[in-house]
Length: 189
Image 1 (cartoon, rainbow, N blue to C red):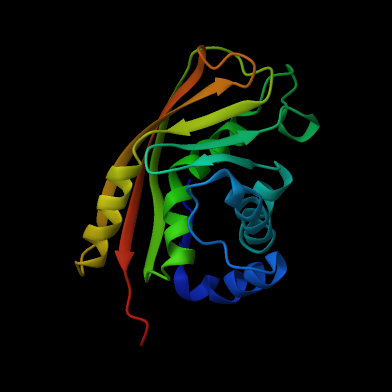
Image 2 (image 1 turned 45 degrees about the vertical axis):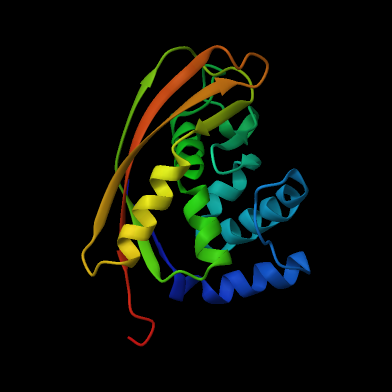
């Protein structure tokens, strides 16, 4: 699965999302900013990743130590067996890993493009309820972004995350590992 976004192609969409939310998203370290971040993600997915918008993700937390996203277990995200469809699980996992990068692209207007280079996961239990996708590797992602900004070469980083049920966060439903590839681009080109 390959997915690419860059700051130039998103500039119009970011401005529209900013206009629709009626104020700047700002730092995402406090719960009071989460409703605005969720509106921003919904607007962005409308223009760039409509399928993600149909899954109705909700950012539950974004801090210096954790990114947590929820996908509801409902008609559009369930498979024929009643558990969450693999495609929905993959989108939740990708969003949890990319959330900090998207926030920095927006708030700092950093000139990077990115793709998901690879994805691997292990299923531990069927997801038959709302699912929370979590990563605790925020500092490592910030370091990758900073490396990409200081280099002309593409920078890759592999990040781990996990999914848990909303009603029982102690039981892991899935573990995943995603490689993101970042490249700085020149705003003049």
